[in-house]
Every structure is written in C-alpha cells, then in structure tokens.
Amino acid sequence: MKPVKKVVFPVAGLGTRMLPATKVLPKEMLPVVDKPIIQYALEEAAAAGCEEFIFVTGRGKAIIEDHFDRAVELFEALAAKNKDEQLEKMTADVPKAGQVLYTRQQEAKGLGHAVWCARRLIEDEVFAVVLVDDLIHSEVPCLAQMIEAQQRTGGNLVAVMEVAKEHTSRYGIVEPGAEEGRLVEVKSLVEKPDPAVAPSRYAVIGRYLLDAAVFDHLDRHEVGAGGEIQLTDAMQRLIGSQPFHGFRFEGQRYDCGDKLGYLEAIVATALARPDLGADFRAVLERYRD
Ligand code: G1P
Image (cartoon, rainbow, N blue to C red; front, top):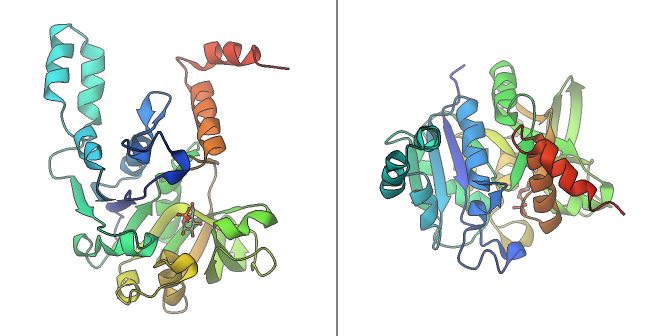
C-alpha cells in the first residue's frame, strides 16, 4: 500500500458564523492561543507523514500563503535581537519550497466542489482531506491514526464520532455495517439528515482518506443537500466498488467554526500547554460561580 503523501485543505469558506472577526481575516487564521487554526491542521498532516499540502483557497485568503512563507523582515529582526529560539521555531514552521500548493475555488459551490478544484494536483492515489475547523486533540494525531488503519483496510476511510441524535442534521451520517475495533463498515452515507431519518448517530468529522476515483463522481457536479455539490454524495457512489470504512478515532474534537466550540478549543489547548496550563487553570478558577 502506498503511503498517503498529499493532503487537501479546503479553506475557501466565508466563515460567516464568526463575523465580524472574519470580515477581512480568513477564519482559518483565527488563533487558538497563539497559533492560527490552520497551522494545527498542517502540523497534524505533517506528523502523519504528508509532504504535499494543497490549499483550496478563495478571494481574501492570500494571507494564508504569507503565513506559510518566510517572513524575512521578522526573521532578521529576531536574529538581530538574538531571539534564537523563536527564530529557529519560526523557521522550522515554514514548509519547504514546493511543498505547499494553492488553487482557488472561484465560487462557493460546496465542499465537493472545493475538493474537485484540487483534482489536477492529485494522481491515481489515496489522498487526505482535512477540514481545518475540526481541531482534534489526541495522543497520536488523528490523521496518523487513520493512515495506519487505512494501510490495513485499503480504500477509503473517514473519521467518525457519535453525536447527539438531535445534531445529525449538522453532519454527514454513516449507515454502519459490521464493526471491528475502531473500524466501522460504511454501507451508505447521507448528508445532514433529519434526526427522524438518520441511519445512525455516527457523524463524519473533517478527516478523510479518499481514493482519487472520487473525482470521477465529483466531475458530474451533482447538486445535493443545501443546493451544494456535496463530498458526501461523491463518497456514497464509491461504496460497493471500493472498501469504505469509518474510523472511530481516539481523541477530542472541537468545532472551531462555531463560537462555543472555538472557545472550548482555546480553553482546552491552553490548559494542555506545559508553558501555560497551570497558570491558566488558576485564572479560570476566578470565574467559578
Ligand atoms: C462538512 C461535511 C459533513 C461533515 C462535516 C464535518 O459539513 O459536509 O459531511 O460531517 O463537514 O465537520 P460543514 O460543516 O461544512 O457544513
């Protein structure tokens, strides 16, 4: 089985749930403590062995490119002030030349369309898709857990977690078949079903390992739930012709696209930081009733 080397980050979304913060700042650049959300996602993918980082951006997202470039004046200033440790860290954080690729989704036509925009950058291979809004804390990075599992299953693998029944209409939902350990056979997928008709409470979370055959289906530009071209619908069409599993990842997921989820991500991340955790816990104590 060939290792997964390419990851697609669809980052063209407008981030309307976080206005006015996202009026000029891409939502992916909002900080969780002192690091933009998008950098956590890239670090997770790099830790899982990915070497090509493909961003599907849109208008107003150019500072994402700047963020993953060398900031020459800043680096010089840090060097002049002998801030060696910071400089080393900042330099190490910049992906190597040619590792980052950008393409634009010119119209907001849905997640399936965003992934389709990256089709020319993917060959006949399994690639990853990471939705940056989903920040995941785990012992082993979620994508690494998935790549390890996919080496055994082959085919397609999507991260799943159980959600409250009343929340099925927020997610792609799996109709599960046989379960073995963390693997759940996927019999079908449906995008944002009403709780009354949802086939389970297993929701797809923003980590996917997909066979490039998904582009054959995305090519059709079929419009689905919400009037958008849905990745879920293209994945559904792969079921039966290729292995398709859900993966109950180990870890805690925070939805940074939502105000409360974003706040929780910040609190959880700060508490987990060796340099901040204890002091921040003391600050939080002051807000107890
Ligand atoms: C997208 C997908 C959905 C998935 C969710 C995970 O929805 O369409 O299938 O469950 O991400 O976060 P969105 O959150 O973009 O509406």
